[in-house]
Image 1 (cartoon, helix red, strand yellow):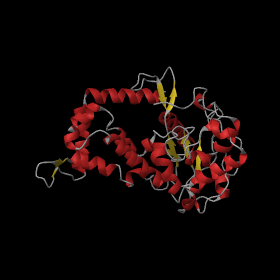
Image 2 (image 1 turned 135 degrees about the vertical axis):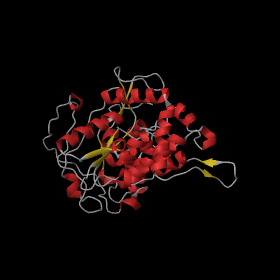
Image 3 (image 1 turned 90 degrees about the vertical axis):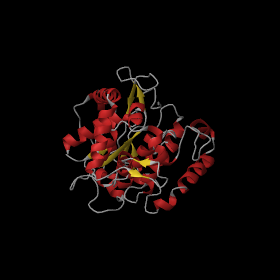
Length: 336
């Protein structure tokens, strides 16, 4: 919660003094050797700030762990309503999963330095986050649409850096969500990138939270596995890979199996080396963490690090760590 409030205060400061944020971006662009460029029409300008931000979203070096560090990469989506959380743009007290994931990573790193990260804790993620591109005041100070900072620019840059981050992940990854909502970058970019990443793959994607408790039990058991949730979506019948949790439970076992098989075939080419069936993970005794944040059924993983050599983790290696499972609160994880 403290992380959420600190981020909200920083955003307020940015809104009050957007020029200071732009000056910092400009200084970084100058330090990188960039200059404003006049385009072919002789009238339009490609600002050094725009060039710098575009390059940052693709900069693998700023998303790569320091030499010798092999962290678990964490991903997140949405959050939950909480009366003590800051208000979001809809006036709802809302705690983003971002801050829960960051707290998890921080506590992991107190146990073993360099063992966990989120996008926003990498060098590139911190830098882009500090530009506050979601804030209209910042976009105006950067020159707005005339300078190439039109509607959707912030989302496009976060989509891009998220895909870059996912492409650099190795081994087991953890997802702070119960499902991938179709409105979120987790579903739109990150899960697909992780499935195609030969150093991760479908079998190494692990959701921290259980499937929604509101689902029928048969749906939770058959469509609530890590593998299916990494591929399917459950909120938009008009988009591909949709599963209706309630209609699914009413189907025959044969129809349910066919539905899952068809979804899995969509990622089969990228999963040639992945186990066909998600193997159960042994339940090792969890390490206790001091924070009450984790007193919800969370199981602290034992040693889970990146492999010494590139390539997917073996089945035995993946099975060597206990599952990370949080029981989602009764209100669910849906939200803006």
